[in-house]
Length: 276
Image 1 (tube, rainbow, N blue to C red):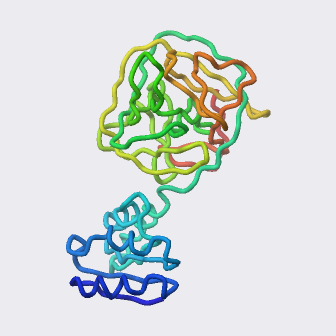
Image 2 (image 1 turned 180 degrees about the vertical axis):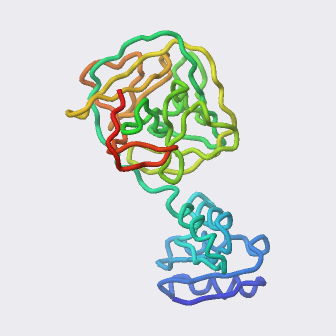
Image 3 (image 1 turned 90 degrees about the vertical axis):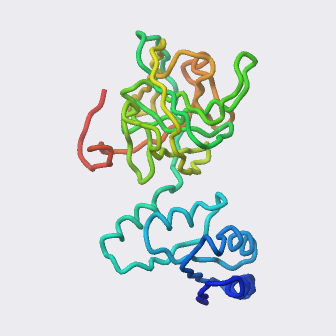
């Protein structure tokens, strides 16, 4: 591993010349606006050399890990303040892969009109990608973004029609929030059918009265549910494709994140909690 200080174009060239020649390179600079991080990431991509960036605060670390969607390979904490270490830990753990399981639909039942939340993000999603939402914290269903055309309305790949206001939604760092609490500027967790995640910022949330469906499913030992709008465009993600809630039937398999324990202010706790 080699460390390079970059304060001018010559330093940048010196660091880039090590791509493919070292196992890892640590780069440090006082001003990343002078030395574009994109240049470093692009140069080291596929070279066999990992690039690590020195960060003095969690905000810089988050930027380094998300630039050009790929980010650097790692962060070297360069801060004299122990109080910031928790912030660095939270940043690094923001987007782990999720372990998704198949659950079997047991019933789809219309319920009374209710308030549902559309989450419009600042990111474009693709089919098979959406948000983890559920009525119970121990089972969050993968609700697909409105990334598919259906012939009646144009796609809205930045949007997830997420569910009723009481539902939990997964957020970065392993926590959850009530959909009713999500606001413009908040970070939310996006997930695809393979469990790959990324963080998106909320542009706005729309709360509107709509007819709802209660989708119930089981993993073979417990029953779970989620309240979703009764509309063709709302889909749950499966191993292959996605199924509209209006077409769901008992026996259909959809993807969800299952966990034990409960939640206290959105954080997982190991205690016996029954939700029903």
